[in-house]
Length: 482
Ligand SMILES: [Zn+2]
Image (cartoon, rainbow, N blue to C red; front, side, top):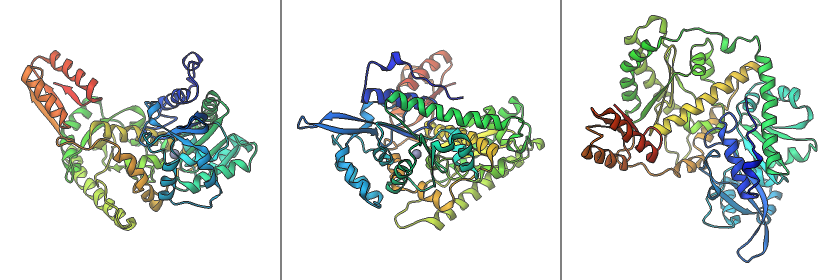
């Protein structure tokens, strides 16, 4: 259940940009409201320009930041007077739009503004939130979503058919809202939600309460329903899972690392297992991404390994992992070839999400945190598929639409903002005597070159202290102690 986290004692110290930062962080705190890196927020206010004149400025999230952790410097200030003339245009290419918005920045040191900037600019409201909430996407990704929205929101909503974000989508949203004076929200098909308010708090309250309405409706419908067609397989016991993982993880890592090394993580949380072990998991998991934002981190579909855990046949599972990862890669290359246009560079071909009945989910990435992003996003996907199938049938972007997002230069630009990969990125270094003087200096050196480290030492406490200290500085799970 989403919760309203606004606390007036926190926020009344600041207005304008400060309050926008506060609101954005609150929205990002709940991943069922805004997934990692997804969604964007804005505030329109009056600022002094470089000549000392008052100008109407829109602060909007910069590209490549995450709502949960972003700070004032991650927002971009745009001169609204400069944006207004393009509202009259019929269409604008992405390049033109990015170029134009670059000229509207009030300070060239600000980050490039979000690719969804214009949907904020074109709406005549002071505060606008665009989010990707599980409950709303459940409706947006249900084949009967529009009728469901009708039942929940009556004449208070605007439904916008799916197109990739950009000028045209922003314009469709603005026109839809203009044509419905009662509109309180916009549902973007297969994508997300737009809400607004006259104050920052009003905008936030509206975002949360709109999502709550959808959640209540879905939970009510879910009562007495069998989710995902019911359970097909039992989860193996914890000991059996551990034993199996010890045997298969090296194979998984080897197979997904043929082109480029991958770090691999494992997840056996309850929602994941109840999905993977269900009758419909195989079919549902192949429909497509639950939100365009997921695509570059999860690919269009996970690899569902068709293993029957009741056999407990680990040799067969090992074989299946090898053959199914190989065919996943072949199919990925074929998908790329079918859809590519000039200049497109194929991404890593290995799956980012692997589902194994009875065992759980395995995720891959260039680092622990990259694997963790795909893991977190797949949790969102499961939640959306649950909602959509409670309401009707789950639908997603078709192949061409998916490719257009996965290989969209503007989406890839966000990824390019990440620091360059260092020499030992994607590698795990095992440092013996790691807690000692030479050992810890070795760890430090390897970390600075991008490695993840296993600090091994007979002094376990010392190793644990060092690992904790490393993770404090380099980020979660860059080190572990043994
Ligand atoms: Zn979006």
